[in-house]
Image 1 (tube, rainbow, N blue to C red):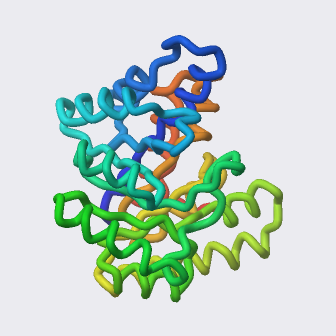
Image 2 (image 1 turned 180 degrees about the horizontal axis):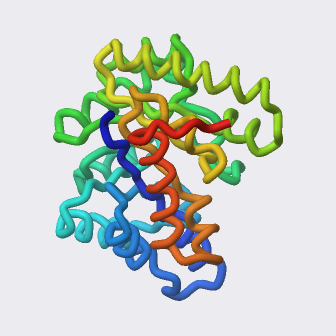
Image 3 (image 1 turned 90 degrees about the vertical axis):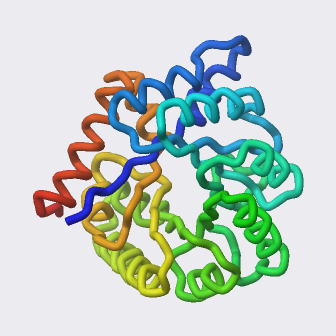
Length: 255
C-alpha cells in the first residue's frame, strides 16, 4: 500500500499570535518543527481579512519550504487579490476554498458546479503559472465532475461531516458518510484527479479515512495545533503519522 502524505496546516499558530499581537508564537517556527517531525508539506490559508496568516507569513513560509524541499499548499479564496498573491509566490499548490467573513472556519466545500464560470479562469491562470490546482469540495459526483471539467489537478474532499458524526457518536451516520467519501475518492481517482482529504480530522477519525486507498494526502491543522498545547507539536504529529501509517500500511482494523 502507498504511503499517505500528511500536510500540516499551521494557521492557528497565527491565530494565537494575533490574539495578543506581537510575534509569538511564530507560524514559521511551527512549520519548521512540523517538517522536522515528519510533515510532508505545509498548508496555510491566507484569508482576505488576514485573521491569522499574514502576507509576511507567506513570504517566510515560501522561503522555508523551498529551502526544506517541502511543498507549500496555499489555501485561498477565488478572488483577484488572492490570485495575485499566488502568482507572486508560485507555491507548489493552491487549494481554492469557499470563504465568508462571518464564518469561524471554512464551512463546506467550494461550489464548483454552481460557480464554474468564476472559478475556471482562476484555475487556468494558476496552472499556466506552474501552480498545482486543488479544489476543496464536498464528496459529491456533481462537484467532482465539474472539478475535472475546469482543469483542476487535485480535489480535496471535505471530511467535516464525517468527523463530526464520529465525535458525536452517530455511528450509522458516520458509516454512511465514510462510504460517501470512499465512493467520491474512487470516482475522482478514475477521472485522473489526485485525491486529498481534510477538515476536522483527529486521532479518533483518522484511521478509517486513511484506509481509503485512493487518497494520497491528508491536510490536518486545528486538531494538531490544539493537541500540541498538551503534548508538543512534534509528538502530536508523530502520533497522527503513526495512526495514518497503521491504517494504511499495517491494515489495522478501526471501529
